[in-house]
Amino acid sequence: MTRRRCLNTLLTGLGVSAHPATVAAAPKDVMETAANVIQKQVDAKLLEAAVLHVQQGGEVFQRSFGGAANTEAIFLLASITKTMTAAGVMVLTDRGEVKLSDPVVKFIPEFSEGARKEITIRQLLTHTSGLPDQLPENDALRARHAPLEDFVRAVVRTPLLFQPGSRYHYQSMGILLAAEIVQRVAQIPLASFLEKNVFTPLSMHRTAFGLGRFKLEEVVLNQTEHAAPESGAGAASAKDWDWNSAYWRNLGAPWGGGHGTAGDVAAFLRSFMHPQGRALREATARMMIEDQTGSLKAGRGIGFDLRHETFGKSCSAKAFGHSGSTGNLAWADPEKDLSCVILTSLPGRVSSPLILHPVSDLVSAGA
Image: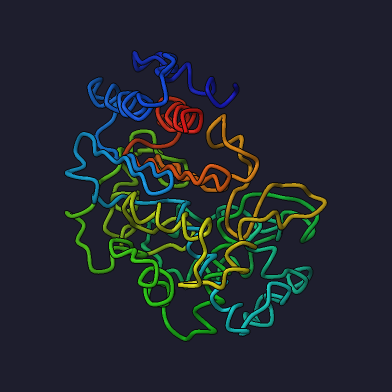
């Protein structure tokens, strides 16, 4: 598949095979085989740290690798963060304080020029608003250690890429505005709102937006050599604002600045497979993992990616989840009562074909 081949040239240059998981395994051996895929890259000195957490029903397999001291190691979650921001918005919908059909301008009055006044909260959360993924001035904002308020001000005036609702285009800035709505309605920082209303009810005790109560030396650092372009691409000039910088780790960007453990991410995913009303109403939780893009057929729920083929090759059509550019993939398959969370320190541009997809393929096929 294309996703398996996209980095062959790079990986060949690193002296690593892009197809590490080609040995068939009996179901009882699947988890060990999956773990070996990860361990192989640690042994090859390509991967510095990882945690694998797989749960099917009441059975849990978890293991830490390399510099991850144990399975409670805290990683930068990158875009998995978006699903948690979306859950925060849905807490407010449960309370009747916002509706997905509400225009954004109702809560952010300055977001009113031209077609902006037509954009709805639903469109922010399904990547159909017309906003860009990253701002043109992203690097400059991060280089001067801008607060999130400066990003919001920039988003308010940035040009739209298309008429709202007419297309799907992955957009971190839409998630930022959704987070801003939560803060304006709740009148407390998003990190505090989520801690009280999502993380604590779901017993996600080692999850935070920004570092929260954790210290930089307590979390896993990322291998920035192959970082995403918007995160500095490993350039020496970006060291004070890249993924490992104190600035970025503390910023709490609602589109990519969350921290958490594999077990906490699994608990979050499983709360949608088995909603019990702890953070969201059952109907709300189920709606978040249903396609919300209508005729666009973009395979997006509320915050979640529903394109099951991007997870494990044997996932059912009901699978949902999200990836993270720092080297993470988290998904759940309600049909199998199965969840799989892989957190690594190796950027997704390299770890996806080497680790994330091969491991997910094994797990989904062996369950």
